[in-house]
Amino acid sequence: MLGDRIEVLGDFFVITFIKNPGAAFGILKEQTVFFLIVTVVVVSGIVWYMHRVYRTSGPLPPVGLALILGGAIGNFVDRVIYGEVVDFLQFTFGTWVFPIFNLADTGITVGVCLLLLDAVLPFARKDGRKDGDETGREKERQGEERPQFDG
Image (spheres, helix red, strand yellow):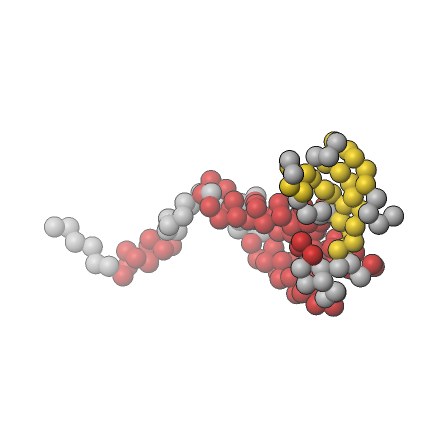
């Protein structure tokens, strides 16, 4: 039943059944059609981008994008079937209760974190370049454009 609670690790981790008619933290409630349209656009964009970067990126972007894709599709299915998203994971830190979420939300969050990690960590890149490094082709082009002086 809605609002039922099962304590897993005392008050720290509780499974609580709720339905969220909005987005993260309940914003934009009752905008189901809007979320369905946005999800179709986002999923299409992710599939296109995954196809584009799959062979040229390190391991983090494809995994991050796959997690975001899975989470978006999971929430999409909930919205199509129930008209809202089923959330159930609740964590409490002292007196602060983190908003209840689901596994799809977790996939989206972890996926975004992996993409951010790839953007800031040079060792995650397949081609070994660091931020600001130039590719060999860029170096060649610069060498052609600038005259070389031996003196």
